[in-house]
Amino acid sequence: MKVVKNDVVYLVNAGNDPGMSAIANDYSFPALGVLALGTWLKQRVSDLEVIVRDGGVHSQEKILKDIEMYNPGLVGVSVLSTSYQNALQIAQAAKDSGALTVFGNDQAAQLSGKILSNRPYIDFVIGSEYGEESLEMLVKSLKDGTIPLSSIPHLTYRDGDSIKGFDYQRDKNLLSITLSELNKTKKRTSALDIFPVVDRTLFPKEHWDAYLKNYMNKFAGLHSSEVTGVSTMNRARGCSRQGKDICKHCDMLLDISFSSPKMFWEEAKAAYEQVGANVLYEVCDSFSSFGKFVKDVAKSRPSNLGFEPQFFVYAQARDLVRRPELAKQFKDMGVFRVNIGLESGSDQTLQHMKGPGDSVRTNYLALKLMKSEGIHVYGSLVLGTEAETPETLRETVEWTKNIIDERLVSDIEAQPILPLPNNYYGRKLMEKDLFPEGPTSDWPIDTDQISKLYVDRFSGVSYEAAVSAATEIRNHADASGINFGSGVSREDKYK
Ligand code: B12
Ligand code: SF4
Image (cartoon, rainbow, N blue to C red; front, side, top):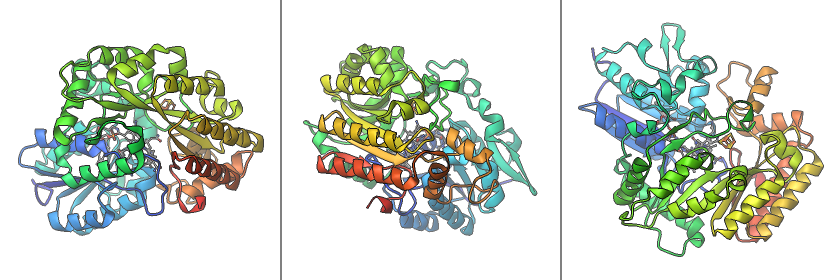
């Protein structure tokens, strides 16, 4: 039995909804998830045409036209909290054209049951942290009906009037790479070697030209040699913080897994060969968490790479301060820029968010260390959590202006806290049944509304005060000539 209307699968990362503000990196780096899934399907399912697009650089209008033109049998959408409205519109258009629809990525995974209950035009949600195996099984199941939906890991689906399968809160322990059928050794080390080098040519050349152009518009000043292309890559996942140590605003699973250092370099080399990318954003949740991995990657850097890689990675201030040798290893492997979650310039709010192992002083020392090694820092701040008071907010603004003046950061991102379904703040709203659209909603319909609700109710400052602090930081960054942005919120209020 063939349930899909043809053998065309269209995979797309939904771009941010209209009016959402951009972080400094937005539209400069490709969405890797859909590329990884497309690469996998092409290799594993025969007689399938796979089209992959990124709404970050391919407009919503073009995506909707593509659906008309390619007439796919299955449309898969990568969905985040800030792209949910676009994702719904894509799914509706796909359904109207007769396609089946599947959602994936964090927002969809965490709300799968509610999404299927509220949106009849979405057929499936795959909640996997590593989506390849389940998507392959779904496509095969839809192609010939031989694989029962109930046997597909992490799949939420309809069965008559009821919603069956994966439920994030109940089943998130099943998402670990150690449980994947693909991971024969069941180990975390080298687990990511099961995923092939990503085929970046699945995105049209215009995508890569747009990333490079957007990147150069913002970041040319960080480079003294030519940037020939930019890409993301992912050969380690997770964070050293687990359980109670997880930052309160973090909504990610943080399952730890690695590739072998050899595969890390194969991926980097392929990115250069495929699309000329010599600037590489390794998107591991917290690269500095894994000292041994960093050391092994640095040590195994091939002498015949054929290009000079410039990596951008996530680092934690406390890792850098506790293990300053990381700075040297970063330099050896080619890291030129790190993203550090600074969160606050006040110990009171910082330690509320991250615990007693972090401090403003540690942040400052890490910034100094990076500057002394010539590594640029992208710093981000989260304002208006429950420990925030007018005094802590002022401290944060003044501290941030200071690190900008001392040229300790090259980019700064500041925004009010956004409660997400799977972070501490979102859970708090959920427990108190405070969602504007009620407990069964597949929120957030309006991220700013949720943020305001939380800050006004639980923090010692008003939402307006948090926005005004973010605006003051943005203005100072602007006047100092450094990049700035605000995530997960609407742009108009910063004007
Ligand atoms: C790289 C990155 C970016 C890049 C690329 C964007 C992208 N969409 O990939 C840039 C810098 C452009 C970016 C922008 C933004 N980002 Co960002 N980003 C990341 C980061 C660090 C890595 C993502 C990644 O590439 N992982 C590696 C790939 C291989 O895995 P993956 O994407 O998870 O995909 C796998 C599975 O999720 C699943 N899957 C994913 N999509 C789908 C779709 C289907 C159909 C299926 C079946 C499965 C599936 O299978 C994939 C393969 O295994 C994550 C944090 C993290 N470490 O995950 C944040 C993260 C995804 N970003 C986040 C945010 C908030 C944003 C912005 C909204 C920032 C802003 N402006 O406010 C924008 C959104 C832009 C957009 N709509 O795409 C949040 C999302 C929170 C949420 N729940 O909504 C995250 C989780 C970080 C965080 N906790 O704050 N981001
Ligand atoms: S350091 Fe980053 S990845 Fe780790 S728990 Fe905190 S926010 Fe999440």
